[in-house]
Length: 419
Image 1: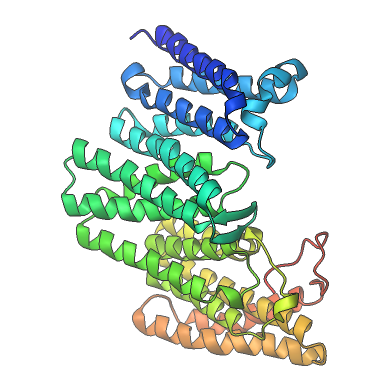
Image 2: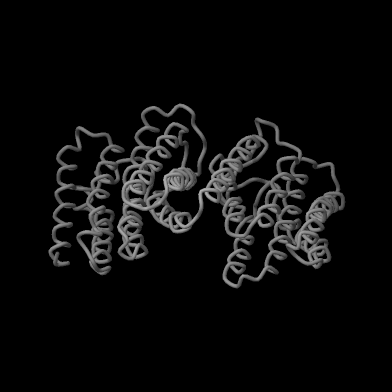
């Protein structure tokens, strides 16, 4: 098909979709109206590999879509006519902008492979809508996220739809073995469910398809045994953090983000990239607990602040394949552990002197991480230098952190991390 005819055809289909949704809007709830547009756009986009054989028409369509959606947001006359179709829900969301951008990104990355394009877009189209609608209608078991409350029922519906969106195309249209197809679909579906659970302001419209594409690229060449191990690890990590979640000061989505972070470190780096943050978490949940009526709740940013430095070293490791980057990663996790210990003691043990808090904040991670460091040296994961730098790194970190960390939990205090 001529690309310009394809562009016009897609625009006409999307225009018809918008008109029909507007016409029947009074019969639909705001959320159902948004999801009707979401599903309709997804169905239209699923045909792109057979309509377009070049990248530029899809990029043009994405740019036109973003421009049109921006006009709906900022131009009063257009907003009055069409704004309620996409903006009728109370929460602030940029999902409609992420949708066309994500479709264009996946189309470019797929490089003409229909399966690698269709599965991510189908997952976004079906799973996201099913999860939202089932959760909104039947959700009873609620959990706290940065955006508010979500439901376990909605997440389970999302997982089921994501699993089928991956499993059926792989089973029918690929040469992947049956066991591998099942394990890929279970693992990828579970992971994108977690990604959806921790996303906010419509970011799931970008994270879900791009995440699914990356997972397919990683998992398709793997054996059934390797895939089974990955499924076991992510399920075990999620169960582990959920069992301890009441001992944390984190929202439920932040706890899940911690499990996802641990899985990513293990999957990309190996066991010794998982053990330091796992030890940090174990120290964290064994610290003196807040009273149940005075427990602060911290969001996803608490996890990202702690893990950002670790992922920086992991990225350098992946780029250079230099195992020595594991040492600064190890020291980074030990330093954060010291900061967390001092912060908790400062809040819950006001009778402790500064010297006692700092000394405890240094000794606890140094002693515990020294045991891990010795294990790593004998296993050949890192050199003995990790032992030499451990007390110095923790002492410097705690000394810099303690004077600047505020006791009060106020939104204006940006230096606050895990407590």
